[in-house]
Image (cartoon, rainbow, N blue to C red):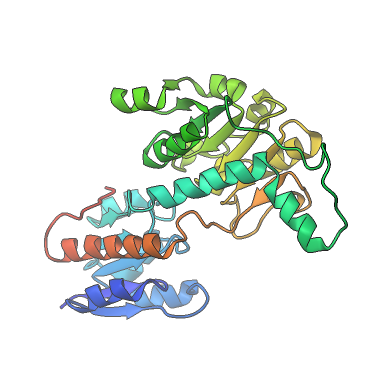
Length: 319
């Protein structure tokens, strides 16, 4: 029987699956586990099931010991894991792609609607108790029909977001490292362009690329200046893809019309200037936050850990 350390609270079904075969040490505190406690708990672990709030680096891998076989991240993104350090030590790293595609695309589409139709502003107005009256020019937003969505990163979530946008009558352009399947491109009417053209022609830019050194501040002052003054930026990928200070300035100066964010550069802290602006919708990282999706994520992470511990390849390996 191996020892599995779970670094944060996950659905009970995943814990039961792990406990059926192995000894499980699961953190159950209401807050994220502290670093020192985490390093202490992983000592002697054969598997670590990690959340994106925990940094899985060389220090932690060394604290766990040479018997550690697998790190199973309960997320599709894995910028919290030092994958080369895992590979160097012969440790399998795995994630949870696919199961959160629809939930995250729903949030992206929700942010597109909230920002273009100024729904956040309207809801805040009602809750504030201010007097209001219907009028021809009251809280006018922008329609989506006939407008262009630019998808940066046309993987599963990007494609799912594009499908939703197409249903709203939007045209699709995308920037990605490689061409998508021609059949999917035809279905979506999607055209591949470079990032500069995407920023120039899009009415809404939605970010779905992975985060890494190549995409750090991919959207900064120069890119925001290239966008239409009537355009909107949506980010459901990772916060540091966007230079938040530059975004706050662009929103304040009217360089772009608005933005919708589910992730932040220094999460959970939000750039203070963004909090003062009406033309940005701010959500607390809700991309995968449905009961069904979070359960599926935890179950896939458990399957990844169990497969490696039994000497098999995981369903969703990273390295």
